[in-house]
Image (cartoon, rainbow, N blue to C red; front, side):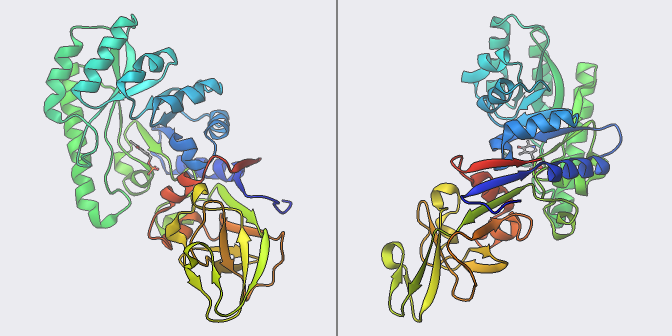
Length: 368
Ligand SMILES: *Cc1c(COP(=O)(O)O)cnc(C)c1O
């Protein structure tokens, strides 16, 4: 790999394949694997990731919003795509592009039925989401009868799956709560099957659900973060390889004398002589101001270089007093070591936030 000459997010498809195959090895035989490619495939490159996963014969994709599904169809993706959180204003587009909606309350459900009927659809696949404790989106068990009654009046849609989402599958201290969610989904499933007279596909687990609750894999599992290389625990992280490496370069090196300040608002005041390096990545690229003033660090020639002063929009300055480096040298923000989870920890956040925050102006470089 030649040294980078600008800020770039490298995407390692071999790592992606490893994570995909590792997850498959952890999934109950016969269960399908849906890969969540929302938010540009967790900040990487949704089109490239989805194309590669289609070659690996993934079963299903999910996105959050309709426009994300449209972009995948434009890129030639043909596998089924579940849209987890579409808005009624986009239902017509959603149908035109063969995307499958998650419907989670009577407002979304009635609206979709109306649009599907107007569009003269027959058995259009829909997915019904139930709330089992996350209290974010979802019908309740008590709504099943009304859903059934409403569906008796039309043949425009057909329930392809019912699903729910776990609130704390990565946190074993919440094991009891998660088991209650699993039980609650089971009860919903039984009533649904009794009422409707057939069994739709059932799915409940996200990545940590897959790893920690093998008894709940059901007909399909939904993985996001695992595919991108994180297992949400020290133990499980060892089984995954982060696919994304954020790299940059040193633009300029400064010698700062005792008493001088660095950056906006003069937030850093030097109490000794030091050497700083200016790096072309800033808060507009996803490195938030919370990483400033000594919290976050980048890695230069194997050594940590902490951020000096405030994070600027397009730049950070880092302390390289004790690092042998020159202008033009490569900088690692996060990748395999330190990984995005370790980088994010310094600002009290999680891998999910930092990887999805990397701005679209940063070039994605696919490594085959
Ligand atoms: C984002 C999302 C997932 C993926 O979760 P991970 O923890 O990244 O595996 C699964 N299901 C739903 C409903 C989601 O919104």
